[in-house]
Image 1: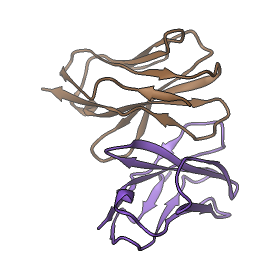
Image 2 (image 1 turned 180 degrees about the vertical axis):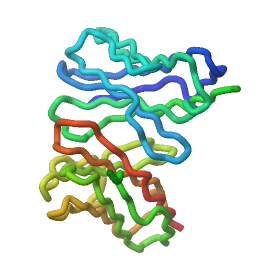
Image 3 (image 1 turned 90 degrees about the vertical axis):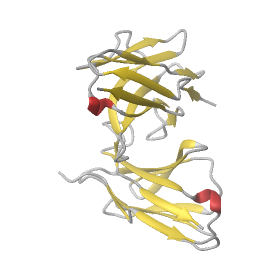
Image 4 (image 1 turned 60 degrees about the vertical axis):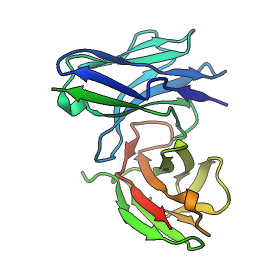
Length: 115
Length: 113
């Protein structure tokens, strides 16, 4: 069974600085997707960034980028120029190529942003 | 375009009762899935529906069931409620089963007393 592990229950960053959230996963599949979702206090989950396993290039979305290390099964999220609005729970998630919407989530990392 | 709408947002039930939660996906989205979020177990996949058929099911007891209507709206039902069923139930929709971004609703917060 696939598992996703986020080893940092809480992280704190100063506004305008950079923070990296860690995620590791375990799978025997070769074709899969990885995601980072953000869940603000309002609770609505929002997709931050996605990475296809077959792509060697790390995904980037504005201030958000990932470091995808397929051999190490590691998928970290880097947030640059942190803003107060980045404060939220961040979840790493995995799904295989043909698994529909069946995501496996990590336990989450609570990110606090200090002004 | 309206987002994923879940009703009710909050509800309180007692043990042994049953509950039905509703989810209206984004217009045009045909795939709907449900997740349970608890502090102890985190986010867990419940089931997924596409074209009124259950396509995938998570590891939950038979007390948890769902369905999807022809207009893609979905309901999930939990019978014989237990204290451990207290959770945030999230619905998510997508255009098709394996393409497009997954959009989540704000959830229905169920408290079982």
